[in-house]
Length: 435
Image (cartoon, rainbow, N blue to C red; front, side, top):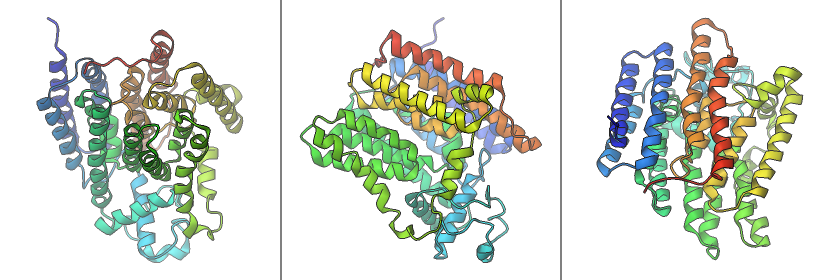
C-alpha cells in the first residue's frame, strides 16, 4: 500500500513532538544526541513529501504550533549542544556594567567583580576577547536586560526573532507563489530546533535579517531603488550577526542591471556593518580574537579534512580550500544563468560549507533558511545528516574527548555531494515543487 505524502507529513510532525517531549523529560546529553539524530533522519522523508505535494492549511498550523511549543518547552533549559550562550550572557553583563565588551577577556582581573557562580566559569575560551560584532553585542545586552544571567532572557529574544523569521518566510513564499507549507522546512527542522531553539545560537538573529533582505529584494523591481536599499540594509544587519552572509554580495552585484548599482549597492551593507564599530575604534587589538578563530579553528570540514589529511598543515590546507572555493564559485556564476537569486544564494552557501574548515551543525542553518524557497534535496539531506556531529558532542561531554570520525564525515557529506552534482549537471539546479 502506497503511503500518501500527507500521512508522512502528519506522522513526522507527531513523532517530532514526541521525541522532543522525551528530551524535555530526560534532559541529558545522550538523549539530546539521540533525539537530534533520530528526528533529523525523520526530517528527510518529511521534507521530500512536503516539497513534492505541499500541505493543507490545517497541517501547516499544526506544524507551526508543534514547532513553537517545542521551543517554549526548553526556554528555561540550559543548552546541551554548545556552551556559547554563556559567552553571550557574559558579554551582555559586561555591557550592562558600562564596560567595552572588546576590552578584556572574561578571565581578566579587571572583571573579577562581575563574576558569579555561573559566569564566567562556564564561558568557553575565557582567555579570549569577544569575537562577536557590535549588533550581536547589543542583542546580548538586550537579552541580559530581559533575563539577567538566566538563559530564558536570550531564549525569549530568540523566540521573538524566530517568529518574525517564520513570518518573513511566509511572505517570501507568497511572492514566489509557492506552497506556504514550505515554511516547515525551517520551523520544524531538527537542526534549527536543537541548535537555535534549545542552544540559542546567535545565527538565529541573522536568519531574521537575511530573510527580510530577500523579501525586500524580491519585492523590488529594477526601477525600485527604495526597496532594494531597504533590503541591503537588512543584509548589513545579517552581516553584523555573522560575516558568512558576506557571500551574498556577489549575487547582488550580478543581479543588478547597470554598472552604477553594481558598484554602489554592495557598499550599503558594508557601510551598515562598518558604522557599528565607530564606538569601539579606540579598543586595542579589536579583531584579535576573531582573527585567531578564523586562522586556527577546525571542525567537521569535508574537503578541508581530506586535503589536511595529506598535507598535515592547517594554514596551507585553508589556503587551498579558499582558492578552490573561489574557483568553483566563479565557474558556477560564469556557466549558470541568473534566474532566481535565492537559488544562486543556496548553491553559494552550500559550496562554502563544503570547502569550509569549520562547519558546526548550526552553520548549516545558513542553508536551511533558504530551503523554503530553494527546496533542494542536497540541502534537505545535509540538514538531516549533519546531525551525526552530535556523536562528537556527546563523547566530549561524557568522556572529555573531542574527536571527529572519518566514517561519520563520509556519511554526512557523500550523499550531499552526489545530490549536488546531480542537481547542477542533470537538471541544471532547476526547482521542482508542486504549489
